Length: 185
Image (tube, rainbow, N blue to C red; front, side):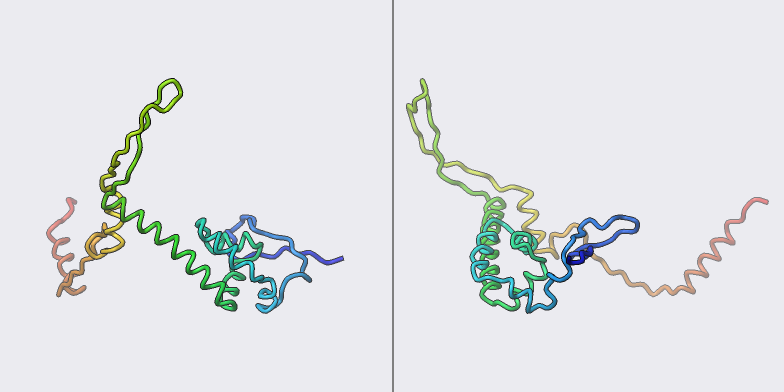
């Protein structure tokens, strides 16, 4: 019978006096011992499956969960299998591009064709095509500007002040002020 011990998975942290939430029981003998062993888990069809997952918005943690491996294994696969890494990079970039385009349209406003249907007695009696317009959205504009031009649009501005006052002069000024304010005795 194989001895089972609780081991931590990647990303686990322990807070004082709190149980470890991601403890997993794994047979010690079945754990891969080297990166080479983890790489043996990789199959060529994972590339296409990972691409599809990325198209749905999956990140490396989601992909690792799907393949039932650790995130570290996904990183190892990216290093060992350049086609896998390139597929993930391209799929994530394509989805990011769609999001950037959508944010741009929300920030600048956009229009598209739409249709209005008139229904009477359960039947469509008239269809009219029209141009539907969405005005620029302030939140999208602010987000865009803060990220594209942070020096001009961030909420906090960093200012540097320099002075020639030394610590000794500050101490002398404090002593003079204290001498002027004498407590009633």
